[in-house]
Length: 463
Image 1 (tube, rainbow, N blue to C red):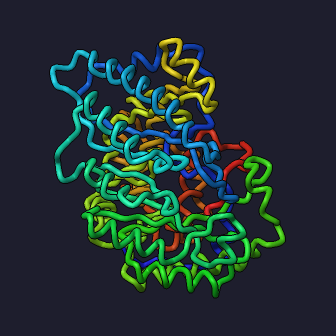
Image 2: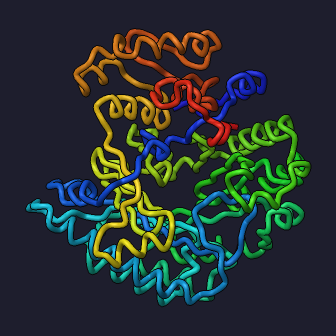
């Protein structure tokens, strides 16, 4: 894959509109209310030997970050985690029992585990140990070197032994948000964490043998400037994280209440914001980082980079992943499962989630069964996002269609992007060019049957 990205601000402005990040297709907004948990039970119990990925959502945060749009509960009351953990263990028991009863002669193996939030390290070291030990007693975990066991941490919420506890429990990858090291910006978004704290976490994680460390940054926050974010990025590059995610801040105060504490007048202008991301691409490329896609960068020897080069990269609710062939089981409030063609989301309200478990049923809130057309479009969208190309012959064989005829309307709509040099279409393939990599979401949206004529304001802009 080419390492050459073409930065064309005028072209970006022409195509830069709101759209999904496509961690699934159909996206979560297409899920519909579930009348019962029967479909999810059937999907969990379906006879298959596919490996498993487990996602556990820990919703609690001790502090509110004003930019955040995650499903979270802000509290300093650590006792709330006691009750939550009890319910979470009960949900684990229910779903593990259904997986075990699927009739397969081979026990399904967990190849991926991710704890997200919220702040998973809101749990104490003892609670994290209890949770992981419970998981390993209910599921069979892979001992392969390729197994991916990750957790999101908050440097401000780490005890003196938390990182060692996580490593001893088998976690091999950590991710944490920095957003910006500039103190003025940190104060404006209520996330103050000294640079020394970040460096200390990096050093400790490396010493303990975590094989991959990811840092999240956000551009477009209040009081950021091209000069200030250049300084932030240079400081982060000097720490040499294995992966970097540089997200575009989507200011949607009408949807996310904490964002109402951010003044619109303090945000950088659109031109400055665009310049910041352009600078980030240039700086990271010069520092040897590979642009994976969708704001994600990785060192060349990182697993994400290697998987992309080998044509084995996937994308799911956890973002880019090397384990996309797994069935995903979501556990905890608001979490999402993807089991074959079936999507199921847990209740996003804590009391409703608990009530369902008290009544011995799965806390299924919304669901979606993907159809044949969904699967065709998913294959195209994920192929473009992960590998920048789609083969028409592969589509024909895989889905028993004449793909060029099936997609003739979409291919016609891409004529403008092809004329602008963002894509290339020939008899064999549709490819994203170097000039089009930063607008790949816009190409994907053409194939999204649910976005045609719909309101995309609830999504963030690509850049």
